Image (cartoon, rainbow, N blue to C red; front, top):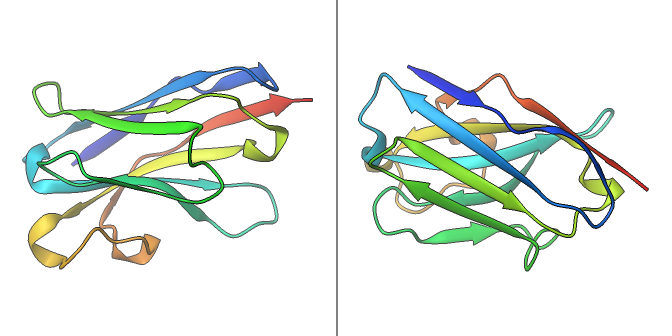
Length: 126
């Protein structure tokens, strides 16, 4: 099982980035995917989450209206489109996966997720 994030980098406030999360080694469309971020000295927090087969998504209040999560099950990839970036969005962003059958609803707790990528750094300058 492997999840690989990419697309991170340095961007000015107000800019955009798109983070792909490419998956392999499991039946991708059986898994809920979440994006999490962790800034230095802060707790890991969930950003958005997307269901396995119907595109239903949940967003944290901090990113609603700015971030969009989507998935292409034919490419085994989830995308995080981040617009109107703010300095407080600076963090390491990681995607994670959990088998849908183990959950009654889209999980928001990082402890519910079984598989994790290595993360990609996003830095937003003011």
